[in-house]
Length: 145
Image 1 (cartoon, rainbow, N blue to C red):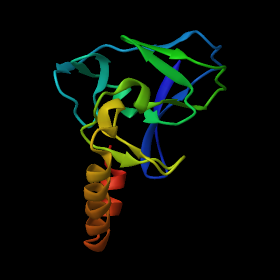
Image 2: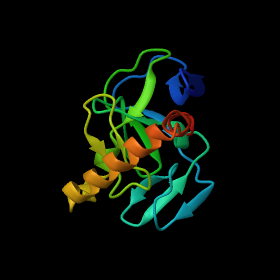
Image 3: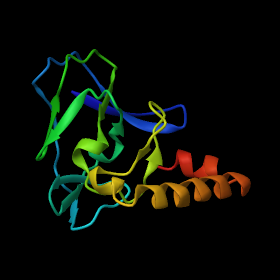
């Protein structure tokens, strides 16, 4: 039902056929588990983060096409063929290993608990982003996934 595609400098997961709301889009098969997040892990329980060969490429969206429920990736609305599969990281992840500024809304995406001390964290992240841009590293970091 899904495939991984490299497009415009980023990897993403896309539907290979139409998918109806409520259906399981993909069943994740963990290739590893962690008690803390990694850049590519998906949080499935309070202190369980999994690595999945396809799940690692599911990108964030403020208006996602799916939600994560345990190991199941479930459609939250009807999905068209070749439409990107996305989930809202702020609904699933407590804290992220690599927070980023959302291209949809411009807010920092760092997990549900990111808001704690957010002003301090935002100032540090803005400073790091600016520094990486000045050093010419920002474009390199954006293309890694």
